[in-house]
Length: 288
Length: 283
Image (cartoon, each protein chain N blue to C red):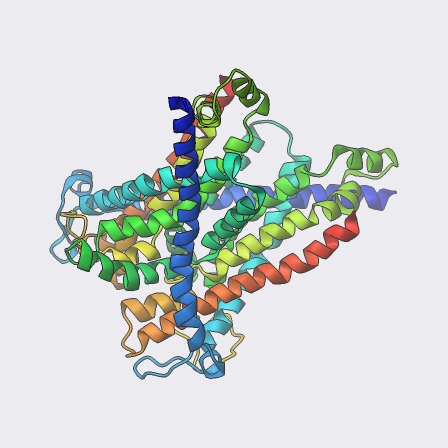
């Protein structure tokens, strides 16, 4: 009997240690990436880093504005496309599609997730970039193709989370609406969607976070010129693509290196804010 | 037909169109990879070492590294992730400590992979002084797997009916005996589904690995040394298209892309099949 009790106590200790370890990892990431990045401001003023459009490290100019604008632009385009399409697909799956079609779409969604991001980037580069160059104009590389590629990548997130949200709505209130003579679409629009709104919003926010932090796929189609975005189809850069492009050429501890780490810290802070936002949105939904 | 009925018909048509469009987009991505990539894959492609300058190189070493790094990362993350998941579902009491751990897991899940790559670079490449290594890459990749494993395990365990636990505890079993002998076996399918999810992501990951495991391969392969740099298939696609000097970069990238997708499907299948049989036996 004693041995069993001891095993019980050891198991509890080991499992607690696992959980604490996971919590320590995120703390360590914040600490190391943050301290490396924030030391940039010993050499460069925050004003220049956040508001100057000039990025010229050899000349000591570290304006990260073009990359912030680039990141926001590609993420915005991605959500403008993936948001409506993913939501429509989710309504279709949850409320309209026959069983077999739902299964097909669910498998398709899993396949979308299974395609690695570098493959999305490569196909964007070999298929979408030439197509945009021929039919839309410009160099092809730029925020338009990056936004399109990201849209495809984050769509499964919106599709899956929105479908869950719609399925979770209490059928009784939908039946009430139908019984009062509303059409299926009126019921979806006036009853189901408002009831699912907090969780639908949470899905969009998570998709934003994913698109904002995506690196390889964006880097392959964005054109990688460190200048402010001028048009949909001319080369620019994002926070993530600039880090992956230049990290290899910078000596540790140099202002250039620290500027890239500061950009990574910015990405980290944005993604943490998104998590807090998701929590806030979901809690508000419960309270109402 | 009233206006409302017309609106209903139109909406139904539009939603069908959205569903079909999603399938077409997937086909638009999969068809080119498979039609152009699968023909590239043959025995030579799978077993030859890559060349930096000449055409005709294979991806043998990258294929080995992909499987090796993925397996190592799972080896590191699976015990800790599942352990933390069990803790959250079975042991954690509501309170500030539990909230903090849950928030940490969610936060870790949202960290962009490039940031994990840079963190791995600071710790393993610079601080430990290993340089680019397979071990450093696998450890960094483990951080990407962790939150998914924790959340998935927790959900799988919460799905086990309370009556199972009560039955076991009522017979005098301890908490751990109950968890180990009753709860875990019924939660196993869910836990392993999480494993396929994580393995699929790890196989295709690039941003974590470029600055931790590097973009070069061993002179000879298979080489089980974990302290050497090891480029994976996904990283190869990136390096060969963005800075490659080989004339047949497109052939290598297409072949590697198709190979990666086949690998992901294979992992799903290899784990899903025994799971399906296990589920039937449990019933």
